[in-house]
Image 1: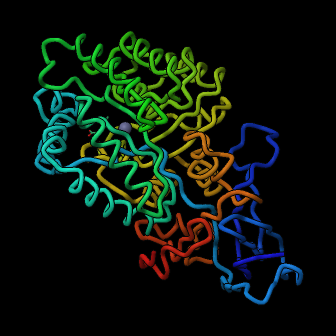
Image 2: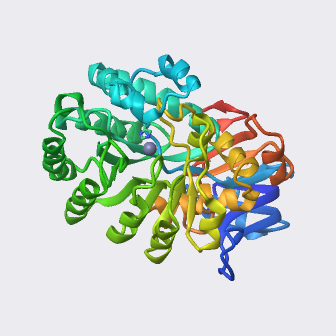
Image 3: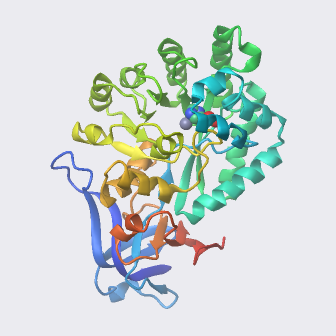
Length: 418
Ligand code: IZC
Ligand code: ZN
């Protein structure tokens, strides 16, 4: 049997494999103590408890002693606005004074200021900025990232952003899943004719699909941005031509975005801080994944999505960063996970499930990633701790020691090495 690498003496191995669901618990993932994990050709070959079976060891097998530390699947950041230019720290004093996010946008700031900067940037500039971000994410254990467009808002400029996604996917160890989000804001040139911009988005959809630049279509369904009716129209058009769907739903105002997600059958609904009880029911009944972005609530000083209620109702919950230059400028998924612990009262196992298997489902990749099961990619993280609780207990620092992407070490002792 040909094995390239075996990690052994793993104190805690979270394989992330889903165990049968006996209740609505989200702690139903497999965890092994004193384990080994064998990797062959970038995939998980086998894992188990105790001594490494002799038949797994060939002359050229690399054996790596993990010294009782923690190993988990690679973290999947299933909601980011990765590719953009500029930054918005000029809005910090406004935010501190309590000026609402939507008011800043109404006055031509917010998303629109990032649109101006992104349109001016070259593809190379966008690539270099996003690459630096991905390097930071990788050091926090992230091995797959969903990346939305939405700072171009013209066909040409949206294509520019999406082509950067493709280039990053080709050139960086992190896998990129690309989402078209032309429906992110009404651009300034359509300020007095938003209906015409919606028509423009509908014209962009097939062109971007034909170029194979995006797998998902997302929309900012929000007060003063895209109404439920506009969102229904755009998402249904996208569905017809083969996009998988996402929706920014009930983030600031309870508009009925979650109900729409259920009606249309989006794969996930994002944010959900203001979701209604009917909305939660719609998510559950239609198997829509609730993708929660708690660092945005933390950064804006807003309320959190009612995660426990959703879990109790049987909704599948994923957690992601929402990395973007406005409401959540952080690449630190470990901080996001620590917020889940301290603010949302999720347990370590619930949190790991939310950022691995459930996140893989939110980007339609659960057959390849999200758990360390036989045949899946050997994307994994080694933490410099002796147990899972410590990762959440000693908060605010990065416990990730090493990261492997498809069986190859890309972060060693906290340093990028790809
Ligand atoms: O740039 O503000 N919420 N879109 C919807 C964002 C945040 C990104 C931004
Ligand atoms: Zn977002």
